[in-house]
Structure formats: C-alpha cells, structure tokens
Image (cartoon, rainbow, N blue to C red; front, side):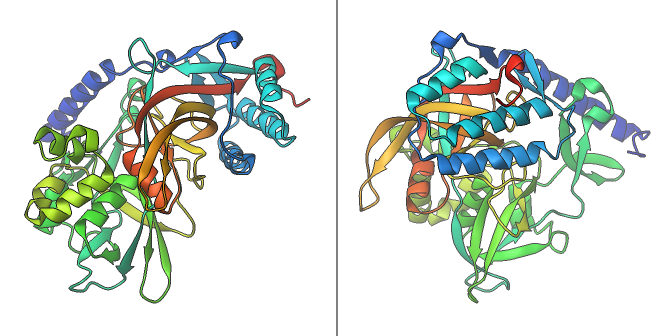
Length: 404
C-alpha cells in the first residue's frame, strides 16, 4: 500500500474502514453464537447414515488440524481449545465409533467425555435454517466455439485482496477486494461489467468454456464442479476467489417480482423460469453482482479448509462464528424421492457432520449448508432444501483430553 499517502487513497481507505466498523458493530460476537448445554439436554445422537463416510470426514479434519500451528485456538462460544486438543477430540470420537457402538452406548460415551454447545440460531426457537449444496457436472470445451461461448475464468491478474488486520488488530479476519486505478484502491468489477463489458479480456485465464450462462451462474453458487470435455477428460474446478461484491439472491428477486411463488422456490424452479423467459436472463443474473473465479484441482470438491468434502458429512457454517473443522450434530429434514425424481415427502433426520466449509451467503448463527455430493439425489436435495432444525457442536472435555 505504498500509495496510501495519496489523498484519494487515504480517503477511500478511511471510508472503507468506517464501513467495516459499521459491519463489525452489527456482527454477533463469536462468544454469543454458541452456548454450552447441560448433559440432560443433549440430543439422542441418532445417526441416519453408515459411519464409513463419517470416519473419512473426521480423518480429513484431523489432517487439516495437523497442518496448523498447535497453539492455534478454536472458539466454541466463550471457550477456546487448541489445535492439539481438537485433534485428540476427533481421534477419541473416531476410535469409539469404529467399535460400531449402539445409539445408547454412543450417547453415554458423549455425555461422559464431550462438552456440547448449541447454536443460538434465530428467535426463541433457536432454530437454524438448513440449505444444501452439491457438486454439479457440465459439458464443456477447452476452446471457445459458437456452442460453447461462456468462459470459466481463473483469478484475474489485477485483483487484490487487502487484509485490514494489517492496519489494526480490531479488524482481524476482515478484508476487502478490489483493484488499483490511478493509485487508488477501487471496488472490483461487478458481474455485468465482467460479462458484458469485456473488462477481463486477456486479464484472466480461461479454464474452460460452457454452453449456458446459467450453468456458469450455478457453478459459481455451488463453488465447485466437474466439467466433462469431448475427449473424455474431466476438469475439477474449485472456488479460488471472488470479486468481493455482495451476494444478492436471484431467487428472492423472482419471488418479490411475483414470478415464482415462495412455496415453489428452488434451484430447479429458477432454471426452469429462465429457460422459459430467455429475454430476461441477463437482467436476472446481473441482479447478483458477485462473481466467482476458479482454479483447477486434481481432486474435488474441496471446502474452505482445502480438504475434500464428504457427501452428507460436510457442513458449511459462518467461519466468523463457528470453529472449523469441528465435530457437529444436526437435526433437520431431508427429501424422499421417487423413481421419477419427484419429492414425495420430507422426513426428519439427524447425523454427525464436520464443519469443513463456509459460504458467502452462510452468515450468522442461524444458517448452515449441507453438502450432498453429486448425482440426481444430491441435486434435488440441494436445490430444494430450506428447512429449519437444530445445530450442536461437540468437543472433548478438558479433563478427558487423553485417549483411554
């Protein structure tokens, strides 16, 4: 920031910091997002899935924790635990579930060895709104053509991210994204400027080309996906960064404009509306100024912790309020789907998950996003899930920090 001495730069920086202060002032403190509950209030800890996926997810979280400094602290409400303690917490839980315990034995084991925290959620019910996401698959090409005109872009050369904690410790975890213009940091281009204005021509690598702008839009919403090429190869594209613009929901827009009833809102319903109203496509998509840039990975999909997400076992939370990669337990609803791909009913379910991801729209103590994997059921569940439930996080009690 050697240009900060310029008056224009100083003004912009001052304005930015003021805005950040306003945002931070309205943010729920970390120590109030979770609260400790007594053992007699613990849930039953019934899990609707086999433990093999859970074991895999736990091992991936342990691998992440082994890469961070041992002294790194993870906040559970007003309490904090070091990385070493988090590892022991997961190892002890993993060792026990590998004995294939009964639900009763598992609950007793948790009551004896683990402290449980609950999210404050929203309102008196303390409920959390659960949505879902998945790994989409699209046909693509390496070369642009008439049939494949939509670029999947990598990180632009002129995009910069400023860590505001460099200016003051009170801005820890806060950053802004932009570019330099006339020695001044300005907001980065929005979706319309990028897609209509050609401002990134030659300034951002093109990873692949897709058929449909709606495919790209939903790829950006999901954060990762597979692109199948005509030679049989497959590209794993993964979120790299964004333009820093705020996310605005096109689903909310279509509801407010009376184009889709709230009761029918889903990812599938949005796509159907756009397909039937092609002349509205640009205005609908440009309503969301946020734009995601991707990178290629050998495997995927990867979450915020750069570990592979496990279908049904990985959860996205607001990382400002919740510890990643903690063991969690969720209670909400999932769809039952018939052979024709129609949802027949929603049923209650509960399971253990790992908080391994985050998301631009997953904000506050009352939001969580379940990763469903890939395939038909995953797309249906992710596209329709908007159900409330409970969220608990578990960690080994401090006096139980040795494997027995």
